[in-house]
Amino acid sequence: MDFGSDGKKLGIAKVTLDEITIYDRLGGDVGLRKLVDRFYDLMSELPEAAQIRTMHPDDLTESRNKLFKFLSGFFGGPSLYIQEYGHPMLRARHLPFPIGDSQRDQWILCMNRSIGELVDDERLAEYLKATFLRTANHMRN
Image (tube, rainbow, N blue to C red; front, side, top):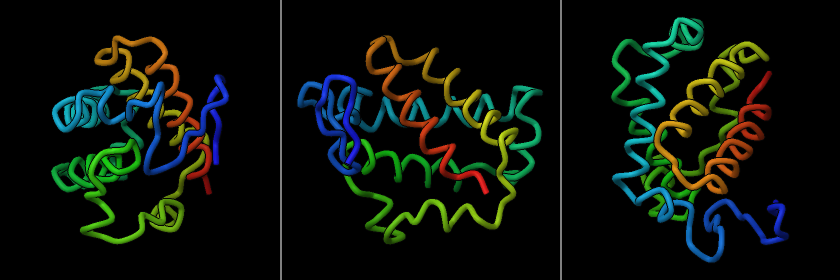
């Protein structure tokens, strides 16, 4: 179990800040979808993310949907990913892809920029950035 800087528990399925889920603080389905879509738009737009973009299919529809469904449950909303695909097993699902510091940094660049553009709450933005960095570090192989 992770704890935030304020000492509150930050569990996977019920991640909260001040007893409100991250999912709700992001604006529910609509806000989370905007974050995911902007993330993948940036991955396609930024020359600095070209290497990680080539690791994804040309059509990002399924990638967008899977990340949206995963983050929905991860941030306290409906467990869409688990309902459809079972346990996320993030590390195992990413092992076929070579993920080093460069790939991690490109992924984080896109996510941090999307957060910067779409999340006005500074505390929430910092929490999201730290959470995504921790997860991206774990995906390295």
